[in-house]
Image (cartoon, rainbow, N blue to C red; front, side, top):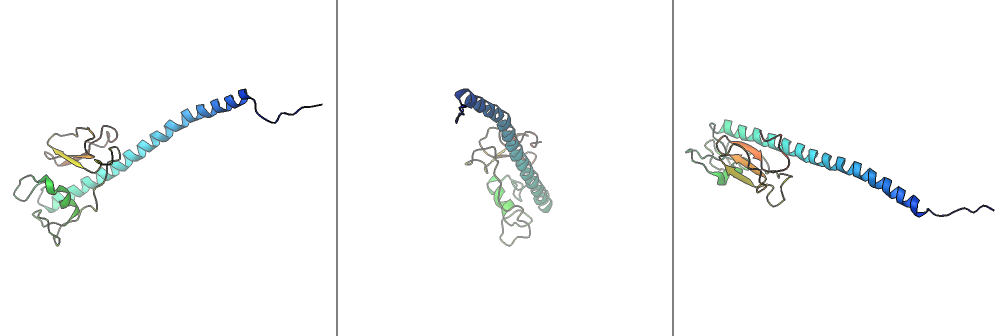
Length: 158
């Protein structure tokens, strides 16, 4: 008489678990790399778009960046308001102004924790400090926006 078994033995189950574990070790890092690449690509697109809008702002305001008032004094407190709202050609905020808005809302840096992801740090250093304290860094010396994250954006900050 033949006796058929109705279950797997322990060795067979261990082999299956081992094969699944090996496959997981190969596949999961590929997906996490793809996720970082997608976030980096998204950030690069946002950064390029904002840089273009800052250049448009400058061309419509006599070469002044959004952080500079009409008298030439630095005024970083109204930087976002000047890009999101309407302004007069001298940079004065005006709901009926002839210039703007340049962007609908300020983007978040996907590599920085949510509470700081949309914040901007201003400074005169040519490159971002990459300290994750804010999502973005704006160099007031050359009016260039950078990603301010230690992870991601390395290739797009220049």
